[in-house]
Length: 225
Image (cartoon, rainbow, N blue to C red; front, side):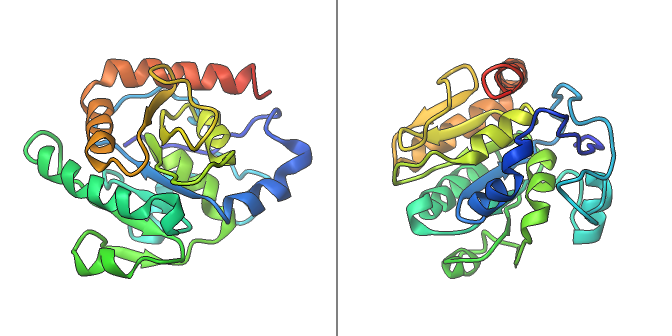
């Protein structure tokens, strides 16, 4: 994982920062940090961002403060069933099984609050805690892949936030904003097999992930600027 910093730039929702963070509190995003993956260094300038207040200015500092390792795989979000958490946990279990021996050990870290008791019982979750809103951007910038397996229709601001950092997004038809095959993938709602397959495809095909990352960043600079 790269030593990534935070740089929203001057384009990012100047007039709607507070409402964006409020929306993020009700959304669920799953984030993957892929060991050894190489993405464009869009977040290479480490600085204390105006959105983040006293939060550490670099992801390395953030990881250290939270007791994480730079190569841990990461999920983040408010956890609700209609956000597809059960599908995500099933898919994660399949990713961990199918990717064994191909990539480093896959770990699941959930930071948020909500309906997340059963995941711990199954040994899928190592760390379950509250994540304040001002850490949302740090989690997204620390990830290499964003997964939004929503069950109900949503115009999630997480997609735009992911694009700001050039992150591919895997979601369902319930969510708008993803260009299938270009900025990520669209999978069937509740299909953990398809979700796991697309996650693994992005993890293992670094060239395709790189192209998705560049196109996502381009949309952030044009369509959403």
